Amino acid sequence: MLQLSIPTVRLDRIAMGISGLCLVHCLATAILLAIVSAAGGFLGAHIIHEVGLTLAMILAAVALGRGVLEHGFMMPSAVGGLGLGVMAGALTLPHDGSEALYTIVGVMIVALGHRLNGIAADGGF
Image 1: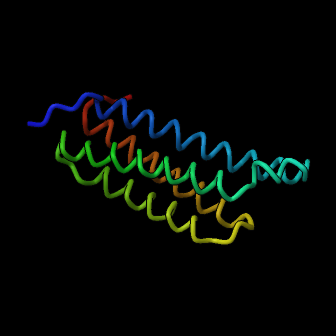
Image 2: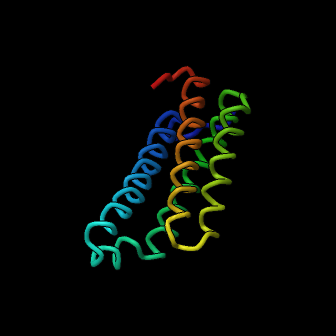
């Protein structure tokens, strides 16, 4: 079997952390845009959303894929893949608030996939 240097449980935790930061970013942007429109110029920038979401999606896919290789269960990866699809779909939406809603839903589904991955690996978190 292939030796992996970073345990899948740790990758899942890192991916969940990055997804959580993405969630905080989306919520903070919406709140700050409502309160201080000047903050929207920086936090609402398309590049921050696109780069952050892309990095989170890549790390999540790696962690979920490695989980399948380690424990052999497909359901965590399938659930996480659904969330990744929703997150990817958010990248195609106009930057009008709807993408934040889709991103939040996708992040929550991916977090469930990571949780299931941890349970399947018997890490439990």
